[in-house]
Length: 234
Length: 144
Image (cartoon, rainbow over all chains, first blue to last red; front, side):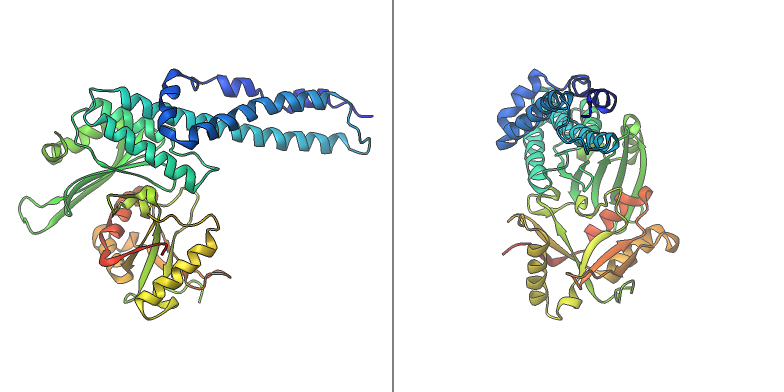
């Protein structure tokens, strides 16, 4: 018979640390649940299963394996694959909870212009995105956090069109007309790409195009001198 | 043939998910690559049929078979002319940063193509320029 308990301890990740190491379970999330339609219960049940499963598996693995033919190496590999899969599930559900918590913060941030409309749009995008790709995050929480920092620092902005990129990042666009707009792609590492199309001051029939990648906290400094604040602010 | 440049007079179509559309308007987010993707997936319409409506119908059937979970009612197909996209990007970024639109057929999709050479630093401006090339009569429901 083969005792596997030592291997379990050495290969198993500390799921509780992954699950509770971040501030993921908050009252904010509870508030946002109502807006998430079926996805709140989906996220919750996946999370509960992911937390419960290691306890069950650990208890089972501590008992001697019934098949003495199993090599310790094969068991270790199997355990490693299982622990990776579990870590992925827990990480995914935590990321989704982070995103929904952030959306909830916007909903309660009354000082941000159009905060409810923005939160509604983000919630719809989250749900659409999860329906399209259930095994991926709904919205990348780092990109969303980046966007929120930007609108918190600039709370008088008009409501922009908001979309989600293939990488689940936030894309926003303020448009005065087809050749006069600002778009921003909020990346994951406190950076943002921007594009400005605007009529050329000297040749009105021509369009000037300006673009670049900057840290999010200097984004407004970068775009303000371009003379676009008047049409993106309330 | 695989790797051939798609003629400038021809058009390619891109499936746009509902999360890239607001108020019926397709956003540039629809033309942004994933970090791990080499090319932006499109379909060569003239490879499917010389008539636009027939080509779009065939494309819908390809999408339906590619996505067994189904295509959402609100998803759209955006059509752009290859020459117009290449000209816009060359004019803006210069010839050294020009993208390539190449035929990349698969076993199940003979019309599959890709937009290559999208550099990370120019990701957003390229997506905006492609979306600005969407033809006025070039937006269709992705599902009938």
